[in-house]
Length: 397
Image (tube, rainbow, N blue to C red; front, top):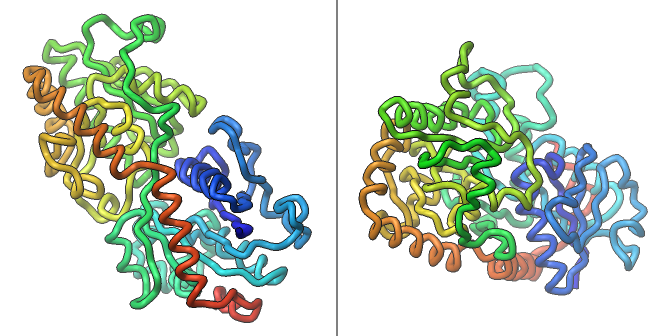
């Protein structure tokens, strides 16, 4: 059995942390010793449930392994959760303490994330001498970091364009915790306590808003406003953090049809999702969405509610009108039309609910997906050697 260290680019408030938490736990169930390293922050993930792994900040890891692994030995496998600059620099530092096999996980088009956050084209950023934020990937160094890995895991198959030919890779999907996320009736008392008007169409969106998805989340507010204006009371329940202004200078119209719950404990999210008539992932097949798998989608499918999806990422894998309601573009008008269609067809709603649960069982199972990850690790290890410090140091070039 191995010592496995996951390296996160943010603390446990990030959606990615749910993935790392569960893979670390599942690998621990399989007999490995696991740990998670964080760049900073006080959120140590206790709200996610039982942790069968140690948690330490980057600055607290100095080559003394006794607080991470009971056998006092260093990690044999280091899984960098995205090639963000703070992760890359930590792995370079770690290579000064020990030898390990490096794996890198890709879950976004990092170049587009850079463009969206820095408001410059990637081509211009490549030529820039500016200092780059460490919570983003470095435009000139992140590809080399990926190339230095023994193997690469991808959350979506299209991310393979960022991986050099011949590099071992695995498409690795997340899961949904069946003890938290499962079909349950709407809680009438909770609806009343939240102030949701009777007979309202309810949307639930549990996710952060940032520059890359701001327009998409805004479309949910617009859909609720359109329905409400045209005589169908509608409410959007929102959780998560807002990292940009996306509703405009006068957000009164949006606040009338929404209830902002802010950051909530992870165990409260299923209750909020269960209040929804439909679960909607807004968006279209663009350079942002085609490379990612929104972290909330496994949980949407596990709840057994009808799901509305754009024909991108997971939308390429589900069957329209069987496992989800798939549209070329899920914008405000598309959401309104879909909601009206489904409201008038109870048989279709039941079919989509059953199909969502079956898709979840087949694709979003933590234990099954963790077993695939374990197999991938050892298939790669069988054909490679751990990195030496000298080899790992090339990451920075």
